[in-house]
Image 1: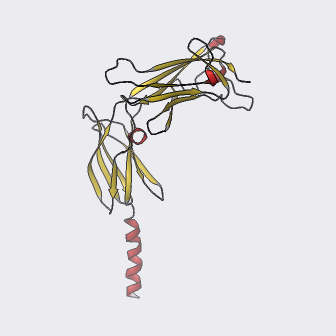
Image 2: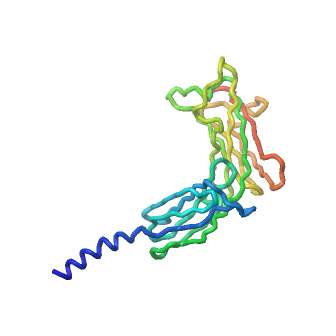
Image 3: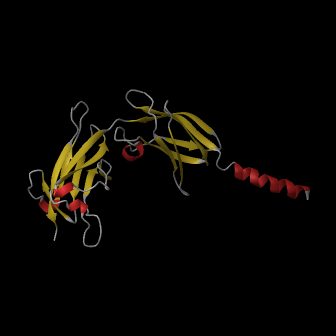
Length: 235
C-alpha cells in the first residue's frame, strides 16, 4: 500500500510541470534599438497540438510569457497602428525559441522593423459600399498586396466598416491602409465581384481589376498611394 500511495502522489506533481516554462525578453525597434511598449507578443507552438499564449510589452519593452509547455515556439509581435511589421507575417524566418525542457528562457530580443503605409482611396459617389447586396451581404471589395512569398495581405478600412453613411447623399471617400515593408517589390491588387470599379479619373478597369507593382524605398518622402472609383453595380 505504501508503494501505491507514493505513485499516486507523483502523478499530479508531473502534471503540474507540463506548462511551467516561460519566455522573457524585450521588444525593440530594429533600427534604433529603442524599446517598443504596448506590443502584443505571441508565442505559438509549432506542430500539434496547437497552443499559444500572449502578453503585452511594458513601457521598457520588456515582456514575459509564462505557463508554456515544452516545444518550439514562433514569436510574433503586433504593435498597435501601422508603424511596425509583424515578423510572423512578413519575415520568412521569425524568431523561434526551443523549450526542450521545463525552463525559463531569458534575454530574447525581438526586433521589429518600421513599416511603410500603403494608402488607397475609394471614391463612392453613389454610396454603394454602404448598401447591402440582394442577398444581404456587404459588397465584396478586395484590396491588398501580394507579397514576396506568394501570400496575399488584405488592407483594412481606416475609417471603419461601421462608419456612418454620408449625409444628404453626398459622395463618400473611403480610405484603406496596409503596413508594408520597404525596399521590397510588391503587387498591389484590387477587384470586386459586386461593384464596377474605375480608376481615379473614372475610366473602367479592364476585367474589373487592377494589379500594379510598387516599392517604397528607404528615403522616399511619401508612401505609395492609389485611388479608384466605384462606378456602379455589376449585373
